[in-house]
Image (cartoon, rainbow, N blue to C red):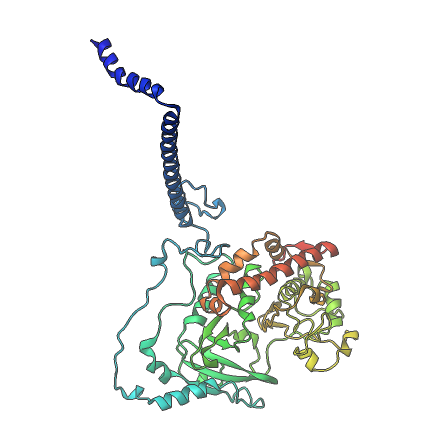
Length: 502
């Protein structure tokens, strides 16, 4: 029974086979070609479907990896995992939202880290305190925009001019945007920024402006424009004081290097600059982004009339103090030496910082180490004959806090990004025999770009004012090229790289 069934099943196949061989050769060739074409079409469709499934799995894997959702721990940095925490929690600070790729991916928990905008309906009130006409408001804003142009330099520091913007703030109270311009998407800020730095950045970027004061600085021709952003203490004892509470110093829109210098200083681990951010004021400079630095009263221990705590040195005295290695190992220098109150390591940090940004107004105010441009201040002052006499060259902008005379504070950080590598000021490195290990290690690790991107991305106003990612990349390109030149200089001159914790 089974044998007859198998023969019955094989009979159609045998019949088709015999019919095939009895056909003419042309028809057999056509049948074979048709079968091959059908088989090839089937293979191509199957391969395409398999590739589509594989790509879908790869995209899903990348999505989970960029959001920190991998559970096997293979993509997490084990050095950043805190003790006792599960490996499924992303721990690398601010890496998830800024990478070296041009297109930035948003973090997974963005909804829980950014405060939503509060959309309120505008209500028109007829309060007497806010009954300003459009003409009065325009006049108030015009006066505020010109507050930095009509100040008499001979006015004493007590004769400060106050501009109260409480009424202006009441008018725009319903238009206030509560979203912070400091963007921190991950659970914590980058490790090189302290909690005090982040708090100062948020204050400078988001604090409500209560009052703006224009104050002179003794003999300095340029006044300071200081704003108060916290509630002031009322009473007679506050009169004559520049700042009560926390304040910020507003600079002109052209001094944006101050913000970049702050982030570079923190990335390199120097910690010598004051926190600075970019901010827009609708009543100043036509709403252009201005750098705002934190006010530090300890730089004026004897009051604003006496100026900041300054170290007065000539270039010759500075070079002799470098050779004597003043205050090293906490050894008091001899009275007849050329040492000042600044620790020896501070000059090494200053030289490295100024070389990367090409800040010459501190150590090379006469532009003796490079070819200046016609618009540079040293060219406008006249010929540079004093470059031949080191005792006639004076260091400038060398400041320290009144209670800490051993450590410098880097202010007035006017850097230049348009200076080519063949015109760098190597005079800034003259006499330097050692440099800080922490800063040099960052330059050698080739992670300078990554860290600067992560740090500068926090300040949204500054980031956008420089043209976004493309503009920031151009600035970092300049710093990276100068870093390579500096590393070559270190190897060529045998400069020691040592730990500087003083």
